[in-house]
Length: 330
Image 1 (spheres, rainbow, N blue to C red):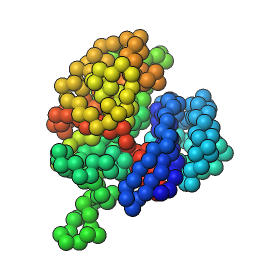
Image 2 (spheres, helix red, strand yellow):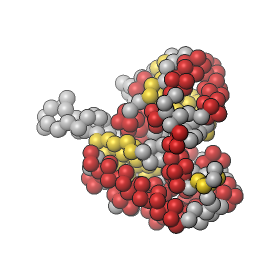
Image 3 (tube, rainbow, N blue to C red):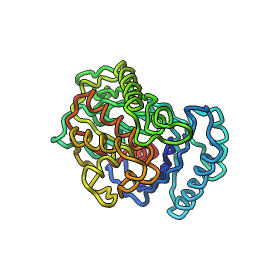
């Protein structure tokens, strides 16, 4: 067993997983998993820079994570940064701060790498499940971007042709990252005069849908969305919609993990969220305070994806890119 620490720093949140892993057997023992909303991508879509206050929030979370990693004596640490830090012109300030605190350099990975880790984390537990048709479509709705990956478990990330009888040529993963996420769509279409418009107007909702549909067109250029047979949804927007659909009064990941939420439920919840005010959303106990302003856009992205690919339900996974990063270390 190898004790690893994986950090996933996205546009909206930063998360830590410390676990004991055995790649030979697939054994996985989780020791610590935590998340902090830091909104690193605050204003990046508009300014092209990471805001000073966003950097400080992120560094404060890194200091907390560093203490946990030391206490649990993780042998290996990997820090992966995604959409916001890819886009920012001052990303070197971010890199230096992380190195000073954690002693490791953040890897600003490509969208394709992000998609590969998300797929691994989401599907490793689904191996052998005969109630789920293949191939999977894994959709990771982040703050700044959304990743689409079609493939089967144990597939390779490059689009190669499978050769019968050749075990070295496994089925391929087809992946694409597109710039639609809950934070980016909120800041682009749901903010006026520095404040979120509540509830959003039909025109603003239509503008988000237009962006998402254009992004889906891009994804379909390289990812065979129509071939997918099971939709697996990842990240906070999806798990939050699932928590609301399940009627939870407090967040319970054990009930959310691998829950199957229908398109009808997603449509109903998205409509309810879009018709609500900030105060009404904040009163829903399973919506994290850091997601109250961005959950409308996130739910709308999920609904649009399900409608485009003809998915009658989404299988929700609490295991995602963070778990994929951990397995990549081991």
